[in-house]
Every structure is written in C-alpha cells, then in structure tokens.
Length: 242
Image (spheres, helix red, strand yellow):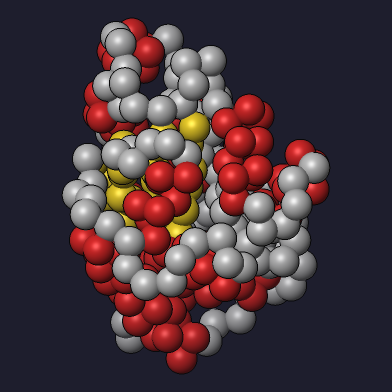
C-alpha cells in the first residue's frame, strides 16, 4: 500500500471536484493545495494553524501526516508545478530537476501514487482562469469581488500559459523518474467519477477498492460547474461567432 497521493494538475481542471470525491472515500487523503505558498493561501494558513515554522519542510510534512491523513495513513496533495517553484524559492526543495521526487522523499514515500489531471478544451479552461483572476472567485463558494470583463488578449495569454504549465509538468515528472499511474481528463472525468476513484484506489494499492468507492459519502457540497451564459458569450466572441 502507498501512503502518498499526488494530484498533479493546472488551474481550472475540475480539481476541486476531484478532491471532494477523493476525500469522500475516507481512505485516500484530502488532496488540497497544501503547498500553495502564494501569500495568505493554504500553506501559510495551515503552517500557522499547526504551529509550524515557515520554511520547515520536515515539520510541515509531519503536521500534514498528523492532521490530514485518512485513518489508513494516506496523505493527499494537489499540486501545481508552480508550488514546486515556490518551495525552491523558500529553500525547502533543491533547485533543478527532480523536485517532485525530493518532495515525495520528504514524506518517506519515494514512489507515491501519481494522478495527472488536464483539460482538453484549453479555450474554456483559459476563460475560466481569466474570470477567476478578474473576479477573485476561484470556487463555487464565496462571492465575486469584482465583475468579469471580456479580454481577448488575456484569454490568449492564458491559453499559452496553461499549455506551458502542462509542458512543465511533463518535464518535471520525467526528471523525477515518474510516470503517472493515471492520466485523467476533465471532460471524461465529469462522466466517470466513480471509475476514476476506483483507479486511484487501485494505484494506491488499497484493500477492496470497489468497496471503498461504493461506500463513499456522496456530497458535492455545491461544487457545480461554474460555466454559465457569460462563459458561453465569451467563447462565441473569441471564436468569432458573434
């Protein structure tokens, strides 16, 4: 059995939905952005709550294992390649290739279960990213701080950014000597959520994967799709239909 799950992804791929599904099993950890070191985000909040000195990787990993592991000892981490860069800047990981393996080794699990999550429709993903940046609303919970405004150049830039982020993940995984146990695609995941969980449980080498998935507590907690009429309008304007 493996005790560490990495969900390697990029923004706006449905990763919050996947995280909720994984957490609902009670056996595969709680893969939040534990290493998001943007000021005031998950890492700073958790380190303060757990009394861990900022930049203390060993202490933070120990706290993660203590506070977030499921009863079977599995810790889940949703991670962007950017988070690895942030850890390098804080001196928590060595620079250069192989940062993901170095992080896994800090958990004492050099061969974790690795899931990648991507989105085929880069235009819609980019629009979702631009809207989130503009409004400050990154999930279905909470309220927007500002109104979104159509910006073609920002959408184009986001498309290139997202493609490059995926390319950087490919390079990082290769440099760390890893091949993903499971490559998930948002457009497929939306219709095969239990199937994805079964495959993740299998990658973690858990006992009775089917029983774990069948017994999970199904509660989407308001994580419905955020795309609406405004998104459709932006898509149509971008491709020149209106």
